[in-house]
Amino acid sequence: MKKLFIASLILISGLSFSQIAVGTTEENNTRWTFGGGIGFGFGSNSMFNLQASPRVGYRLTDDLEAGVTGTVMWQTSDFYNSTMFGVGPFVNYYFARSFYVSGNLQHFFINYKDKYYDFKASDEETALYLGGGYLQRIGNNSFLQLGIMYNVLYKENNSIFANGLVPSIGFVVGL
Image (cartoon, rainbow, N blue to C red; front, side, top):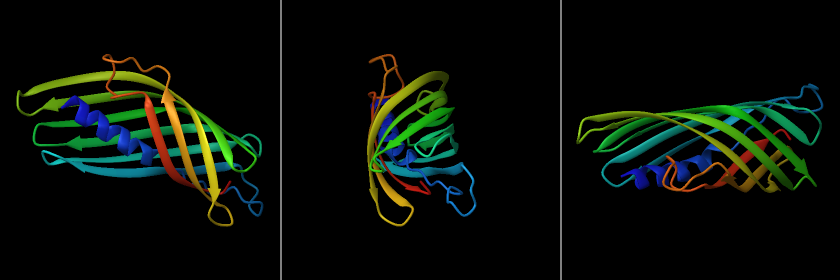
């Protein structure tokens, strides 16, 4: 059951790293970026999950961006319900207008209810994702983002996550 939950979390978290940045054009001369991602998934035993990952950032330079990101995830199935909230800072460095490296520290709060055994539990976990990827221009100020990140704090058999590797696919607007 835990592996199904974690596999779904990893699949959906790929969508959570998609970004939409606004307010970064020369005309309005602002360095603030806003955006995030949403995701959903279906699985066996009537499993359904929904996730939102808002973010706000600030371009420190043309290539360096820092900010705060969050994660809210709700998941249910025939056997369990769970909610997860995460928050923390991120930093992205863009180079050659086609590549980026990224760091994202998030602290997660998890509430879990097993419907079959009528068992409830709460947990917390911190994740430090480091990685990078490729940006493909798809419009004037828009990019397709393909990347991979690894949770360097991941400990096998002692984590809510199935593994430390998180692929990401998303869109960035306004870089």
